[in-house]
Image (cartoon, rainbow, N blue to C red):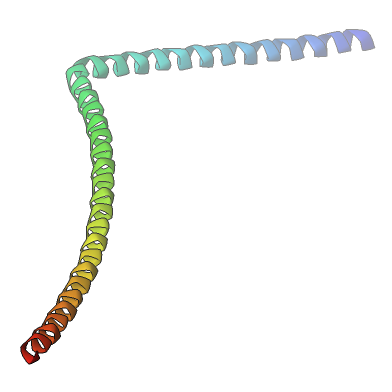
Length: 126
């Protein structure tokens, strides 16, 4: 009798588990149906807006290329500006050296004029 009761309890438990399994399978089927409906709706939207999406993607690619070109141009401009600054610095150094030479030449001319004047004065005195 006791084993019979256990067998009946187990049979009831198995029946309950099978009912729950069937309910879960039905729930799974409903979810799969909803996923399919959503997938179809997404496909329709993509198809409806395919041209716009393609144009948007093309614009994004063009923008990325423009950003790259701008970055390269900016780097080139920066390099050119640095080269110009270096050239300007070298030119200023050359001008400063030439000013020194001109100053030395002017001093030498003044000394030569003074020396010539002394020689001229001596020659007049003789």
